[in-house]
Image (cartoon, rainbow, N blue to C red):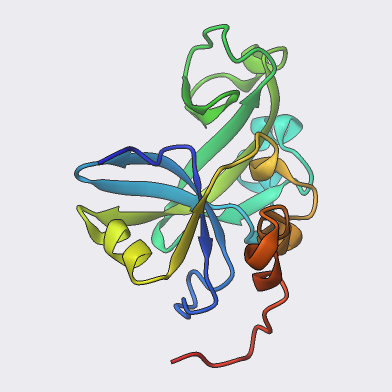
Length: 184
């Protein structure tokens, strides 16, 4: 099995689970035992400053918490985009290129020069061994390459159609699929 860590899962129109309808998930880990990711396009109205005050200066707009997924919604995962991806930074675990997770127990003041922005996710999306692969085979997810800015777009609600449109061809047409059409 080839790891899909760092790739995007883009929900297809047949996936009607309300937790994942029209979502874009960045896989931060994919191993034989399962996969873990965060939903990139579900912003809440809760400011990062209300929950993690000192981290709010590093948060990209919109500087709010995001719904990372239905698993452990009271936990937090922080994605960071580093300014210098090859320079080691304490608490940073690279996912792909300059993007990775960052340990929220690290003092954010010590990261100001290294971090180009963060996003904080309440909860995560998780799959057991083989579960994600079955969902992909069933047609629930497109697996696509991520761009470094995907996790940090200013308008996260536009991410699903944006990622599909940039694929071109028939995939771009899916971006215009009506949200209220029932598929069997």
